[in-house]
Image (tube, rainbow, N blue to C red):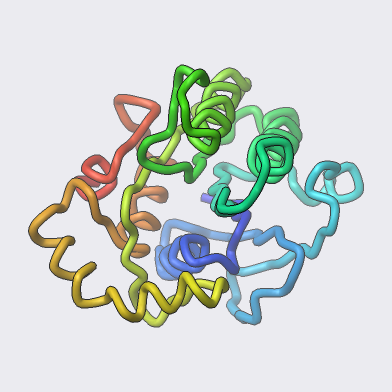
Length: 219
């Protein structure tokens, strides 16, 4: 399986990349990002690209892949809806539309979040935008598309958030996260489990298009 990964330098993306590089069934990983991740591996290739609304200049390098793991995401904290929509919906759909045209047999997996609003009419701005993103991804002509909605995610294997205040929260809350993983598994998962589940779903499929933390952990 040949995989394209968006967001490889983020916390979730780091975990997904780790599992892809460890998995013997993943032949190649193409990481698309604005900055280099700093890793070197025989299976890993990187493309640095600035304009995530227009992939015309790198289209030739995006063809011939079996799966895309889309792990890009931003916090809506302090952001108005127009800007959050651009960074969430517009960027994701620009990539997905390009990939669905170039790779019609591709499986596309999008990391969204628990509480996403599929009706697109709820009170929470971020949930509405995420809901529309999910809905429109599911309409594209991929072989299949899956929405991963983890709740809390515990970073493992030295993986860190690039956002300083988020990383501080993870450091302080580490003992609590470990406890929650055992006492409330439906609301917690790990970067390792997310990565392993993505690979399995891309390879074998899943009975439903939206996966919550419980589904991720079961896989």
